[in-house]
Length: 114
Image 1: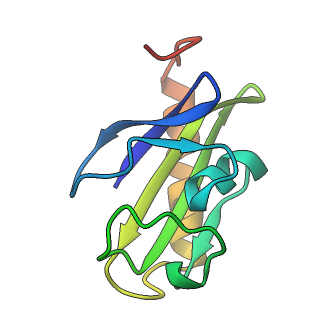
Image 2 (image 1 turned 60 degrees about the vertical axis):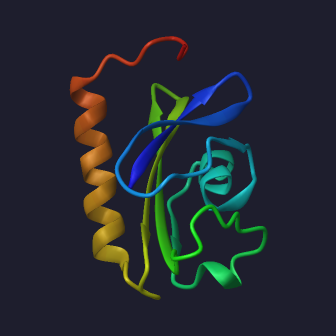
């Protein structure tokens, strides 16, 4: 689980918990890059079936990624992986979206990430 923050023209690994992850992800690449590009939650039951999936952790089998958008500006994404296929459902996606909305209410995101 972790955050990728939009920096320049790519997502860069921010705070995270767990196994080492990909450090940089291009817009539209993999599940995280797709969520950022489309600005839509990506709920993936089987990552092996996702076109262009980036296998940062071979144990990952399912994933949910929530884009973080504030005032029409892409901040980054919240990425959560699971070693279990179909681990996440619409309720999880809704709860995580609510969580991101609460973060946006209380956080003043910088104009750029260093």
